[in-house]
Image (cartoon, rainbow, N blue to C red; front, side, top):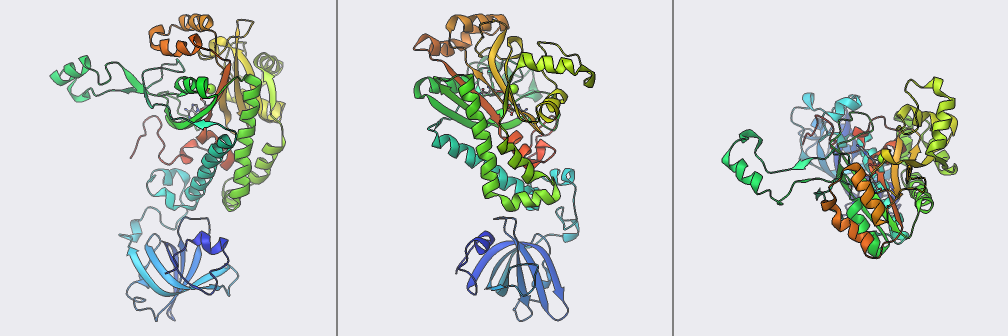
Length: 465
Ligand code: 4AD
Ligand code: MG
């Protein structure tokens, strides 16, 4: 039995006129009175479907085949032929069709053939991968993930896994989820009393907001490292660009500085976009038709234009010169709003921007303080459509400065003694950044809401499944 995927049919040219077997799900079933059914079958291996011709000579034609509806799963054997019609290239002339799974009550099947809104299919996250749109996004997300790993691997970066359960608040923003065994339903119970006094880890622990600090310890020994995993932010940011659980790629490099690492960040981003253009053309054509009719042009333009490096202070001057456009106050020391970011990228620079050297009070304690003692060697990469996609910096490698910053911010010095060891013992200049995977997939696909580019989105009030 020559069992192949639908992608194999279109990619390999040695199956024509041969007996093949495929598995898949019915997308459509048209049957004529003369006893012939045209089944459209998909198996998720690509955007393509295959037409299967089933005739009444098949033993289960009247008992099963004419009853097949969208979503039924099947195993089909038959001869692959060139199609006589001009809607498709190939057809399978079925010799045998086995129904593996029926749809209970097709009238109420949530993924019926009707055009559904994105919000509607989001309410069925467990069934939505059956739609073309989520299939396309999943394949692009996979290509981006593989591309990022491969690029780093090619440049000699070592993959390191950093812990998800942690006692440190890397970003110092306090927006962490506590991990606890306390029983909420029994606040005053004996068991809670015991657990409280014997915390599982003998201390308070949380879900990580970033693996950076532990990653630094590996960079300070192995030079070039990265981690890639889920991170958690307990922020009440209910926007189209924020998730509570998202995937972050973190890159850390010793003997590096802000210029070196930000140029590398641009190359990494562009390489992943180029890989999608090279490997996912049918997915992009689908999105071009359904979501964003400029997608291919937009991605090619992204590759052509060099990112512009600008100082934060210069950005404030630019915004002040155009202050009538914005409702909010523009002040040195304030974070940029998404409207301001959009203006800079789309109108002022007409390019992605790397903003560097931010006021230290806007950024985390670990960023290296500049000679002016007011700014830190931080950078954010701002791209069209999504705004901030990467945040990074040089790391403070001088122990006295680090101590001073921790005191200034009010961090518990005791928890970070191990981190200070990295500066006590053979400290090195080093730098790194974090890239939000979903923001990158959002940019590439042109999708409007980040909830569509992660399989099971977690946002304020939503943690289904
Ligand atoms: O700028 P952030 O907070 O940087 C860090 O966590 C650093 N420790 C990274 C490092 O230097 N190793 O987050 C990095 C990126 C952002 O630029 C954004 O792309 C993404 O992570 N991100 C989010 N994506 C989705 N939902 C959220 N709530 C996000 N918060 C950050
Ligand atoms: Mg940031």
